[in-house]
Length: 484
Image (cartoon, rainbow, N blue to C red; front, side):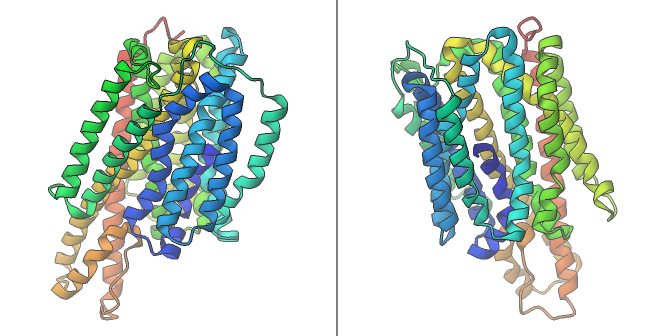
């Protein structure tokens, strides 16, 4: 449920934007409200599982996540949907670290790599299945159905947890760091708001500068508090391990690239290439199948060859797959334009996810299983939050510049240019002003589409560069011996 809802919304965003009349900034928050609370509070969730029992916290997360999903499905406007998505993230923050910590506590060291590989494969598969399920539900029923589908899933998950999941806890765990959780939510929230607002208000405006400086101060206070708290949610001592720190840096870069492209690609498929929502979701099927099918195999390779080589190779392959989406190609079938990038992208992620998770858990040890899984999952969610916010700013800036160049070449009247300014914030959903002469409308439509395609290619190349940086980070930080 948690991983599906991290990506299911993406392919439904064009429909949600149209139904709720939401600009891109609100669409970003529909994604980021979930990532914010999930990323900031997943550390609290890990600590709560260690302290109160991982199965108990997992079940509490299921119940909260389900209630928030129903709220999402009933949302009457974008503000209500954003609030409900934030509540979903809180439920997810209880679920994810508990599930991984349960696995770590249930398997001996020699079997843990394959077990974690299975967990990573399931999480990767459901993340990639999100767009497929979302597209089918949007076209068949409504965008609201992508949230209501969590109800039967939650019933199954609750029954499984009650019947078969063993209880486990860290008997020496002191408490839950609620203050640290609140500081994390405030700091990351201010950062996301500042980055999102910069796309429309500009970097020099007081609300933007105030949010960014405020974020820096609050995040500094978070580190100050964590260094002094009796039971910190973020045990800073874990970062003394170069392998643990490096693995989380790789996670940040790799999931920045993954989530950034996952956010923008459906707009390209639906609004530019003319796919239906279901067709856009089905376009992700190779990515889903490869990530789900090969992650367990990759977990076995980790036991045999170590994580370092797999992380370097996997990140490079991811970068190559993403770069293919940025290469201009003539209009053609799915198999010649989208399929190759999906295949390579999926293979690279399948090489990376299981060894990355295994490296994090092994470098932290059994005692900090909950905290380590929380930190790593928080890093992945924060990476997604930053990708959507930061790449959204860059995409709108590139879109504005590219559109201005095309409007100048068309000698577009000033009145039409001014009418187009409010549309810039919608990117691929931007519409030709109604007062435009019918003879000029096709040219303006092409200008809008071409400007978005250019901005999409540039942001995709930035994402590919982040994946390459993750490969370099793996080469420099993952110790050869400890990775085996």
